[in-house]
Amino acid sequence: MQLTSAEIAAWVGSFLWPLIRIAAVVSVAPVFGSRLLPRRLRLMLALVLTWTMMPLLAPVPAVEPVSPTGVLLTAQQVLIGLSMGFMLRLVFTALEIAGQVIATQMGLGFANLIDPQNGGQLPLLGHFYSLIGTLIFLALNGHLLLLKMLAESFRGLPVASTGLLPDDLWLLVNWASQMFAGAVLIALPAIASLMVVNLAFGVMTRAAPQLNIIAVGFPITLILGLFIVLYSLPAFLPQFERLLDGAFHTTRRLLG
Image 1 (cartoon, helix red, strand yellow):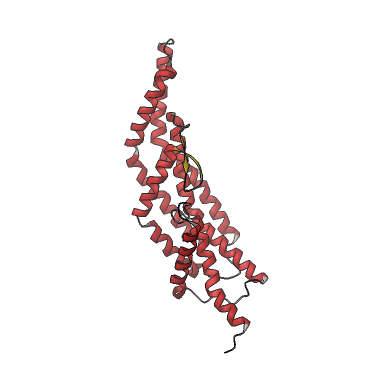
Image 2 (cartoon, helix red, strand yellow):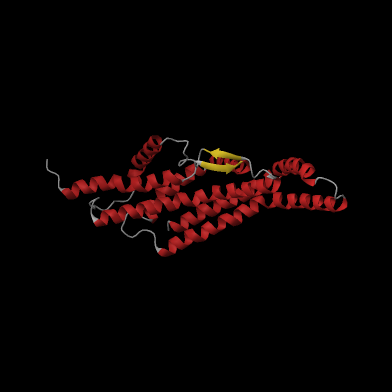
């Protein structure tokens, strides 16, 4: 039995190029790309997903992996995978920013936790909102929808030397700007309520200048802030669903 280099390249490429795209998504996407998961487990997950999706994929061009065209294909698959995961990653970043803004307003800006998912420090409320968002994401089967879109991405953007275009990259940049708007909308009820509390303390300071407003206002602001966060949680779900819908819709446009 004799095998030519073209046949070997076709067999290797049919598994290698999808694996690169899927591994890029797994390394960045929420839940899948968490640092709580060991790298070996994420690599095994990418291998299993690639092996599962191979029968559903379109034929992959036979290209030598070490050739210039192969390097270009690798870069395109990495860019596509990172873009898909980055879309959803921005949604959870918006939650972290919203929690940070609220924590600063209520006096919890100094309370930071080591975020095991990202490997850095995160405000306490930012970690709280991120945890709630992760649970909602799993409850809404967002991880399954992400895997479905990942499989469909090989139809809209098959493995080829022409992947994402400049217009697609601008679409990604425009969606990144929505992260700040989403963070403001999530934190807006708490920000408005805490602003009223701070205005009340300002009136108290003018009425009674001898009152130590720092010693009195800090615990009150902290307690009221916790109640405000508790009662503003029902408004959290619609905004989070809107951000998720926008992320998935933008990803579908990105994938054609």
